Amino acid sequence: FTTRKILELGVIDLLELPLNTSQINTLNKICDAEMVALRKAEYGLANKLSGDFHIQLAKFTENVTLITLIEQLIARTSLAIAMYSSPTTMQCDNHCHFDLIKRLQQTDKALTKTDMAQHLDELAQHLLIEPQPNHSPNFNELFTKLNDNKLKEYSPSERFEPIYAHDSFDAFTILSRGTSLDERNISLSFCEKPLEISKLNPATLAQISRAIYQQKPLLINYFSMDSGLSE
Image (cartoon, rainbow, N blue to C red; front, top):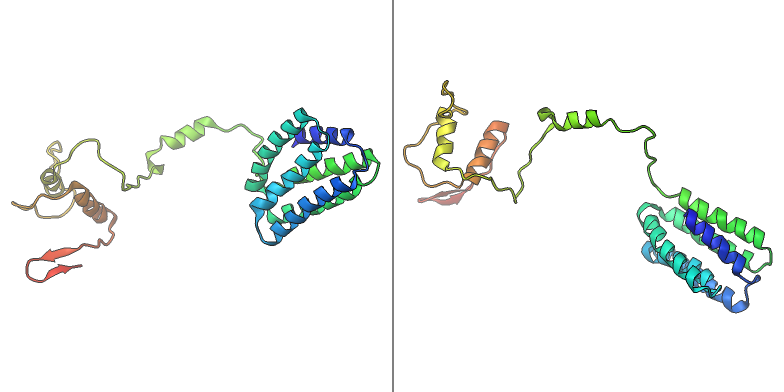
C-alpha cells in the first residue's frame, strides 16, 4: 500500500483537474456497480470494481508505464483485501470513492492528494492482520517441544501404510504371549491365542488392538453361517 500511495499520488499530479464530464461518468458507473455488488454481498466483484476505480484514474493519465505498475500493485493489494478485509471496510471504501469523485471535480490537487493518501492509509489499517510479536522466537524451546514424545500424537489416516509387512498370526502371538525378545514374556493384552484362525488383515487387527488399548467401543460387522450379517 505504501508503493501504491506513492504512485497514485503521482497519478493525481498528472491529471488535468477538474475531470471532464465523460471521465466523471466513467468513475460513477464503476462506483455504482461496486455499490450494487456490496448490496448483493458479492464481495469478490466489489473488490475487483474497487481496484478498477483506481486503475481507471491511472488510465486517464495515458501513461502506459504508470498504468502497468498500478495494475500490478492493485492485483496484489486486492488479494490482501480479499483475505483480510471485512464487508464493513469494503463499504467504507465505496463511500470514499464517491467522495474522491467530488474532489476530482475541483481544481485543488493538494486536497485531492490528501484525501487519496488518507483513503489508502485507512484501507491498509483496516486489514484484519494480526500483529507479529516483537521478540525473536525461542528456537531451543520450540525444538525441545518437538522432541518431547509426550506431546506427540499419532492419528492413523486412510492413506497410512506400514513400512514393514506384519503377519497377523505373529501379532496375535505378541498380544497373547508378549514378544519373543521380552524375557518376562508378559502379554500386552488379556486374550486367548487361537490355534487356528482365518487370515486376518493386519489393518483390521490394528484397529481392534487400538480400541482395546484406548478402551473404546468397536463396531464390528459379524457374519454368521446360520443367521447372516449382524452388528
